[in-house]
Length: 151
Ligand SMILES: [Cu+2]
Image 1 (cartoon, rainbow, N blue to C red):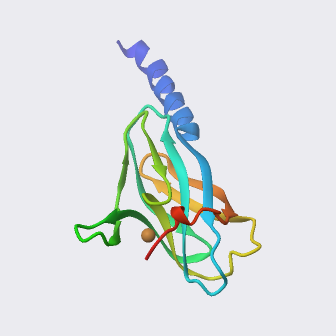
Image 2 (cartoon, rainbow, N blue to C red; image 1 turned 90 degrees about the horizontal axis):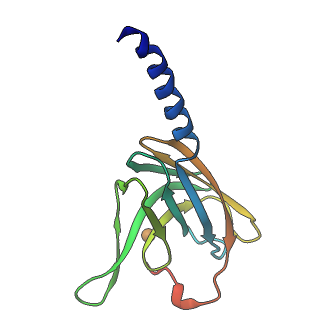
């Protein structure tokens, strides 16, 4: 019994390591270009948990904004578009979550510098299990006003 214990510990240490490396996969990230002087914008992406554990997105930050929150756009019973803050986003094993215009989004509040002419915005996502994941999200100006983010 004693002899088998050490290899077992090494095995679990390796599993833990590889898990932390690539369990969260982020794709299609972008940030909405807004006119200079606009204090808010939004970021979108697909977050996929390819790990072998459930995970949670617990906080967000960006150098260009004073605060960064996860929101979901909703339409209330009077047809008025509103947004709700999501404190913690659950990411069960094998699941993916799409952040897109009209749905869930990363709200950039208190933008410090103009996004016009900027190529990328750095977004840092902090996961309970996987730690920090930094994304370089290209700044895009969507052509279709239907995808607009209303406040
Ligand atoms: Cu919002």
